[in-house]
Image (cartoon, rainbow, N blue to C red; front, side, top):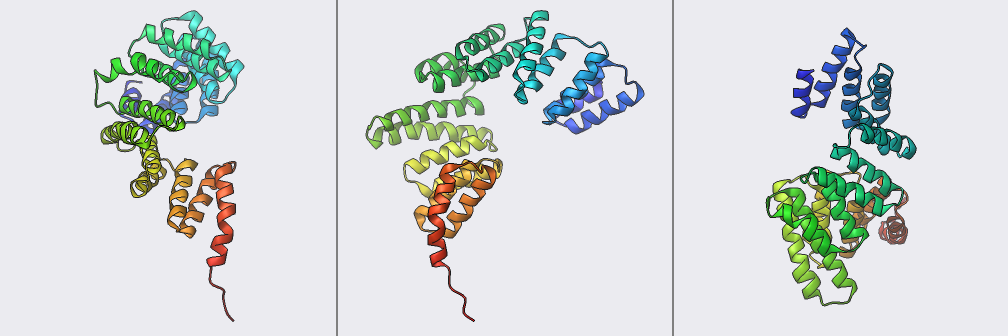
Length: 309
């Protein structure tokens, strides 16, 4: 168990899982071993297998608050809301001190459309642990996006943390999101570009750049920075960021769509068509990409040379 834990801590989940499997071959009656197997499977995104392992742990007498929390979290990822709530409630009844359980319950409430209930759960998680990153992030995003109150989001759930760690990639990414929200609001209100682009846009770019400097593989920071470059007509820089965002997260249809938009603006219709097609491969319901491709295809066909006999 110690060896598997050390393997997991250094990021080698496959090795940790293999060690647990070997331990189970020697003694398959230990509920905790099945629980840990489920946890490692869960971290690999193998939710169904994780739930089977957790169920086996329950059958063998495992009923710890942590086990119920882990089962509830796995059900959350599968959108099995009733089962998730049942196990998370059991975990909370047995141990109300775990901020992870409060945070997961907040996610459950939010998934049901109960924002205020979600807020109360996340607030309690943060009260239990003032450094709890997920609870703080959910509260920040709630006020920034759902409540559209960026100043409260920033003053309560960003500034106190960012001031203590100005180089943290997540905190700088969230600071960039704050300025992006200010940019979008000013732009929608018809304020001049020197305000929404020159002021808020530049501040957002600086924050996203700091996030990328600290964590170069931050796909969303690349995408968001590229979006601001796009809005301010710095298309070369925007394209670089959208390409990088797609490399880091190939499933992000938006990054491919934005590449297509820039290629189309440049008149590079074949490249635009290919980018829109890749966007649709990743999200067949992407209406804007479908419309752009349908409008572009006749132009590409008319430019193709006819083949003589």
